[in-house]
Length: 365
Image (tube, rainbow, N blue to C red):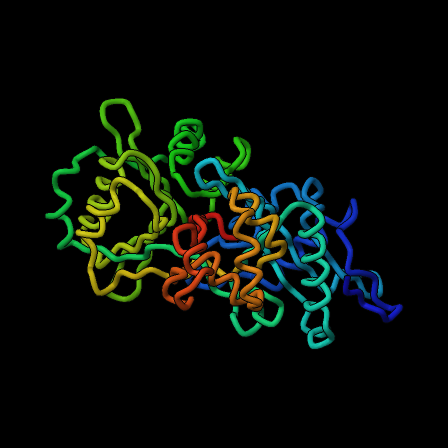
């Protein structure tokens, strides 16, 4: 486990009672928000489920102190990935921050090593983050995973015109949070959320919640952000769930709004009943299978065991690949047949990989 050896530094260590407010001030000063994030953006507004009660979440905050103040921080935010009957607890890494005057002294390296050991010891066999690939690859995180990203526009409306569920905006989504949460749990590959956290996710700054309705029943919902840039404007759908007719009605509604140039969406690359229709409505040249994030394998046997695939560990280990290469093999986006030669390893792995693994952009930490 890495440590800062100089006596003037304390840590890395978990934040202690009474340090929550200082942690939030420190990371808020480093991540003040940018113009494209919208008015009112802050770490608290963007992540109310993580920073709304800091003293209750100190076990997610790891710090280094110098002469009485916190100078470096890394968060480990547990994410419970669900894929059918499989569950795997993942360590989401976020708010990696060091004060300007203390950069270049190895603090980020010490914290990331410390947090990796923490995840290994607390049942998190895999980790995910978002950031600069060249910055994090040397610590073991590699772009991997798979998601379907696409654009639709006003010309798509004709393809989707038969999906006519009424669309309304929920001004107070907390009143329907239980219904929305039930729809979220129908997504076959997702991050599970607690009943307490789910309504907080609907409050992210700049997001609006829309529902497709048939009679009095909500058939689907979307968490979306509107953007405008000169004469161009559009919607970014950052989470969507529900029945196929409702999901497709929501995309039709977004694409048909006056002045909307394009709608950006992202869904799991999985057996979703509406995926084929949605693909047929996309701007084909703006659609792609992309990486989900930067993934690090912390405990490969534990990870494969979570997916009831422990028998594959010997075949993966026999390849003697680096952790970066193993992340791409296990999570894609390329299938094993694209990166393995013909042989026993390919026969063992090709039908079982990549592992099903997805989270909506709204789950980023």
